[in-house]
Structure formats: structure tokens, C-alpha cells
Amino acid sequence: MDATQTVPVVTIDGPSGSGKGTVSREVARRVGWHLLDSGALYRLVALSGRLHGLAPDDTAGHAALARAMDVEFGTDAGGAERIRLGGADVTADVRSEATGQGASRVAAWAPVREALVERQRAFARPPGLVADGRDMGTVIFPAARLKIYLTATAEERALRRHKQLKEKGSGANLAALSREIAERDQRDSTRAVAPLKPAHDARIVDSTGMSIAQVVEAVLAAGRAQGLWS
Ligand code: C5P
Image 1 (spheres, helix red, strand yellow):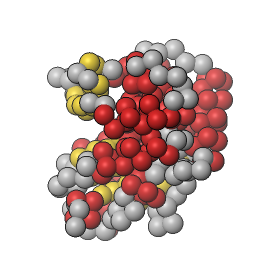
Image 2: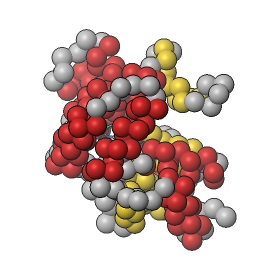
Image 3: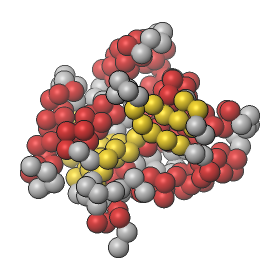
């Protein structure tokens, strides 16, 4: 039996700006489980491709980087997220909107997705894993003990992303952001491989009008009801 069957996994999938990143991080912290931010891996593939000067349509080259890239997730002394690629701090680049768009393009390619499967499953380590993404419940961890599909209206998601980018000090235009989110939703949900959709056994949580704290409490309550934590 591999670790994905013995270690309990909670999956939190959903579209961009649904709040799943913040919610997943907070749930993992509260229960003391590991966190997989799978979107960051797709972002790192796009960024590595750019740093290696790959042509934007070089599928095999990006898949090779997805397999080989040396990635480290951590936090700095103040507890802020730090992502390293080949030892260099690339956190700001990884989180930029441009890298998000690049990620959504490379994520549509089957060889890139395939190259990341084992890397993602390796995050399932005791005492448990909270996995955040688009296909965590459908493809990567189909046997997860609890699957959440977190959504919100497109308007609310654009507003949240806008606020988040502003807080990080990067300028962002709300109208452009709404357009980019709509484009990304369209590409993520219509691609042939692992399209964004709820697993058949996922609980759908519409977070429109809910605070992050309320969503976190809802996920914690669902996990408690499943006996995953006390
Ligand atoms: O969640 P985040 O915005 O970081 O994801 C960036 C892009 O990576 C998404 O738009 C999506 O195309 C892709 N992705 C994916 N499968 C995942 C996580 C992210 O296809 N499990």
C-alpha cells in the first residue's frame, strides 16, 4: 500500500480566487498536517521554462523541467511563505499574475501533468495532508477521506484576488483581473486533461459572502464529523 492510501488526505479544489489557498493553509496549520499547494508547482514549471528560455509551446521541455526542478517550500523568520527554485528565492515571481497565466497554459499539457503526479503524491506524509488545487480529489488523491470543492462567484473572486495582490504591493487593475480570471476559468475547465470540476463525492462549498474564518470552520467541522481530527 502506498502512502496515499495510508495517510489521510483532505482535498480542497476550486477555481482561482475561491480562497482555497488561504483556507487550505489555515486548515493545515490548525490540525498540524502537511500542505500541498499544487498550483505553485504548475507556476514553478512555467517560471522554470521562462528562466531556461524555453519556447512557450515546448511541451517536452516543460515536462522535463517539471520532473527535474529542485523546489523547496518554506517560510522565513517572520512566517511568510518562501519558495526556492534551485536554491534561489522565487516567491514573488511564482505569485505574479503573469506566472499564474503561464501556469494555466502549461497545466493543459498531459506530459507536464503526468510529470508532476508522483511529486504531488509524495507530499502525503503522516500525520496527514491538506492538498489544494484543481484535480486533487479527481486525479491525484481519488481516495481522499474528505473532498471539498470551494467556489464563489467570478465577481467575488476577482475582488479577492485584487485585494490580495494589493496587499502584496503589486499593482492590479480590477477589470483586467476579472478578464484574466474568466480566461483562466475557461481554460482550466475546458481542457482535455484533468479539467477543473468537482469530484463526484466532493462537498461543494460556495464561499460567496462567507469570511475565510467561516470557510475554515466549515472545513474543520466536516473533518471532525469524518473523525479526521478532534
Ligand atoms: O491555484 P493557482 O492559481 O496557483 O494555479 C495556477 C494554475 O495552475 C491554475 O490556473 C491551473 O491552470 C493550474 N493548476 C492545475 N492543477 C492543479 C493546480 C493548479 O491545473 N492541481
